[in-house]
Length: 268
Image (tube, rainbow, N blue to C red):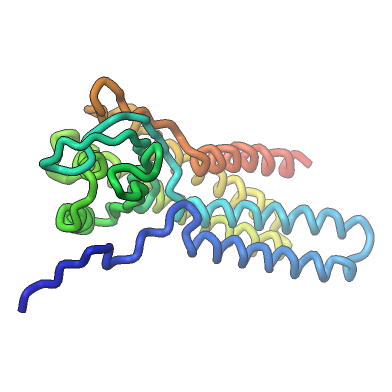
């Protein structure tokens, strides 16, 4: 039986940035916060304000830890260039190529400027997962079979396990440990909340400090990638430069802020 040739994508496009998992986590945390605010009038005296601040602060930490595990903007970069659109074709397009790195994989975007060129809508967003070497290679080969544009395949090839750039080995290993340490921070956060609900406030403060330290160590693990890259991604004379994204800086601010907060509580 011959394999059918589809004139369209037979797989759903990957949710980008605002993944359904991220939305579910945010909604769950908002519902939890609203529930605590509803029962707030039942708490008397000055303890009400302290209790509200503690609950909202704890929920914020937990939300950040969970969300950044699924976001795609730990490291981002983009470049505007004129490049070939398809293999074995001399047709050129003016487009913006974007690279979005997360803990679970990399998203490569291609948006035409303007979007409609060569009688096509040039607006691609493809995800390549590096949860395993086999998975990334499968995603890459599927992209080849579907005939993705040359710029997307060129960037994806740089992260291929067989690429001499070794970007896959660096990113896969670093993001693996970053994600693992971030989940350790989540476990430490849960334990700190349990201890705060018991007459062991000092130990709760210690675990909150441990949570912040896990977040910072996770960021250090991810940041080491930028110091060891062996090659750049060139488009003619233009280089696709990357920088730390929103998820990285949000985690950094959370880690620094809540590493100081337990120290203040311990002094008090």
